[in-house]
Amino acid sequence: MLPASLQIPAFRRLVAASTLSVTGSLMTFIVLPLVAWEATGSAATFGLVMTGGSIGMIVALPFGGLIADTFDRRQVMLAGDLVAIVVTTAMLAAVLGEHWLLLPVLSMLQTLAGSLFSSAGPALRRDVLTDDVRAQGTAIQIGGMSAANLVGPLLGALIYGIGGFGAVVAIDIATFAVSFVLLLGMRLPHDVTRPARELNSESPDTARAAIQSVAIDLAGGLGVARRDPYVRWSLYSQLANGTGNGLLLVGVIPWITDHLQMPATTWATVIAVMGGSSLVGSVLVARIGNRVPPAALLVAGLPPFVIGTLMLLGSPGAFRLHAAFVLVGLTNSALSIAMSTIQQQRVASTHMGRVTSLYFMTFQGAQGLTTAVAATALAMFGAAALVEGVVVMFVLNAFLLARCAAHARTSTAIAAATDSDLAVSG
Image 1 (cartoon, rainbow, N blue to C red):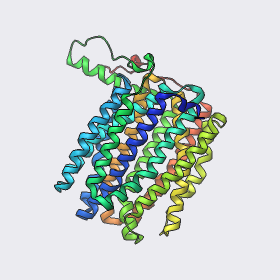
Image 2 (image 1 turned 180 degrees about the horizontal axis):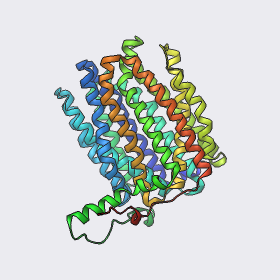
Image 3 (image 1 turned 45 degrees about the vertical axis):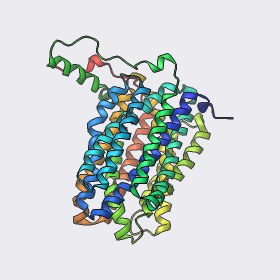
Image 4 (image 1 turned 30 degrees about the vertical axis):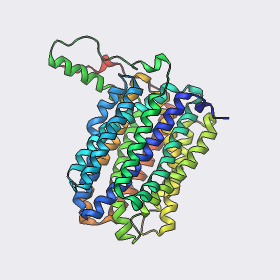
């Protein structure tokens, strides 16, 4: 028998669409930096390619969250799939024509589409799942993401070796198309398909008033963070995590190839191993369900996460390298499920899209700024120094997550900010 959450048809389609879309995107994500590094050998070009997507996410996410809180979330995700198909096709043309400077721009456009998907998806999940299956459903969807992390890199590396970058992009586009069909056939109750909230209905008399109205709407996520210490500390966690990931994105491939003297495809196997262990962790958490409070799950995942991170120090061999990412992946799934469950318990549906966007924007902003700086640091100090920085930031992230767990246990949930309290003066 299917788990209770998967007996909800709309949730089944949402999980399938999200998993397929992320699988295809990860194929391109893994292969694109390999193509750029192998074709140019330039740290500056490599860093520019890696930075473009993060910058696009910073620009897009506030509006993606507002859109997800205003319009039919299913239709928002459909629009994201369509835009992604067009932009991914253009990305292939840029690579074939060796127009490397276009890739950051296209990555920015791709993240505009991704912001719609990443903001509306978790908000729609909150609407579809009932409280009694929320933890289980969150674990299953994050398990789908873990499966994508397992399959996507391996499949991307395999297809790239057989058919080149064009074949990778073709399959990526196919996953977006299938995701679109799954979402198109999704049927939701009336109170979910209508807009989660309405924009300020009064027609502004001036352009200044219109700008003020939009600013109030965009500030909704910040209002929740200001009032809820759990949300605030989880944003600090996203800041540290994004910084660590930015260093990792720029430094890991040169570190593997030049410092550890391993094949570049080792990065794909590392990501796949982490994805597989995350999948195992997600399955275990799904079986636990609501029997363990999310805050307790968060605390339990921190020690092995720190141990796995510290194993990256020095010059690990292939076994220790993969073992480190097994620990990180296994515990990261528990951490992600716990954080997401607590967030959905504390934030009202009317503000879920904007709070989710605020999380992603903080992460992507830190990651984007870090990749821009890390490209210079890579040339000056080498890849090993960047990986040491990764370890520092991930250990700091563990400390911040411990503070999140403490606030989740002791502080009172604040469902949503009041828009009238956020009015822009002037």
